[in-house]
Length: 537
Image 1 (cartoon, helix red, strand yellow):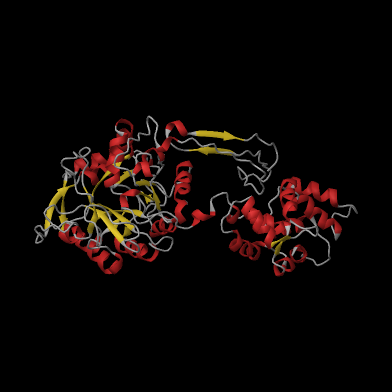
Image 2: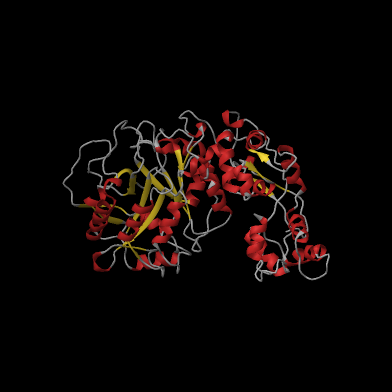
């Protein structure tokens, strides 16, 4: 396979390789190397001093460039004298070193996927090159391969799960002048997001639009977003998607919103309770393939538990506090006040009918056990309010989140679409901790790491002590309990290669190091790093 790639890179077909041709060859086999290092090896191998390599010189160049003694040592342990790792020995490596439970099934597939040598592939074996390609692939990831599929109990109430959730999903960039796009919804959903936000306003031609109100962000049609959600909701995960409505529309355009959701989503839209227990949420398993709407609901209308009410209402005033709270930028607040915006919103019955299990209410404190609230009532909190509750009333917040859903969203001052640390809110059982998916950074790295678990399904079961109604857990002060078992994490850094440059300069060479971080409760945060290796990118 090496010679096949070399022949492709030999542009003038003279059976010799110039430095430029060799660099093209390296790209062909997915090897990045800085110019200085490549030239140094090239000059070492050019025994004939012709500024071109041929035959043995080329092979020597490749071997020096790809030599990794630490990997050779591992490969030699499981390979034969001819340099082949049999399928049986690959199974042994996967069991003993990688600790993969499905090694017997995985080994033949890995050989077919990564082995470049056709002879080895036909013999169901792996060469060192194929082995190295496997180690550098997603299949060689340290992440537990068994957790790449759904393995957790998906039959518990919806409130028992962390839910991958996006804030201002429509935005591609910042919250003041950035573009809005249906593409942002597609990206979020294909990343496993299960709760998306729609910021809805009256649009021209009686068609509701979505944008960040009172800003210069661009506008997109509500109907186009619903179509995108329909097409991509279940491409990555079969489990329910929640549409979080931030509704600023007139009654007439609310009716248009309801019509679009019912006609476009059809059977996907949940419009009636599922069978089963009417005192708690249905499970993700029961809600597979369904889209739920989170929003306001008419107070005297029939509720999700089946209690009869006045079902003949056309529209009614409901609190607009939560919608107003989400527009926290002071300049926007001033404009709203100047326009005399009321703290109530008239809600169309048709839109209210689309809300089944996620009725938005204003939070007025944790419930009195003697007067419990309906399980389907949920509140949204700005990050600062939620963090204050977590700090001052951690255990109470955990108890609240066993039965109710809580949605957390970034503070209004984050007009650059920056993110907050989701860990502190997960630690008190908050499920819908919404982040700006469009903004890369440590917070989104942690977020994506969390939801890589359980088959990238967008739902991760909370630990037992965040689901137990008798729990005394408080992340602020860790006491003895099932959560107190100490574990020691040992990581051995073997080697690395093909590291990206830290800047775009052609002459830049990385001084690599590896940093390991643990994110958890305050007492469990830790960070370690290896020594820095200079000029070794």
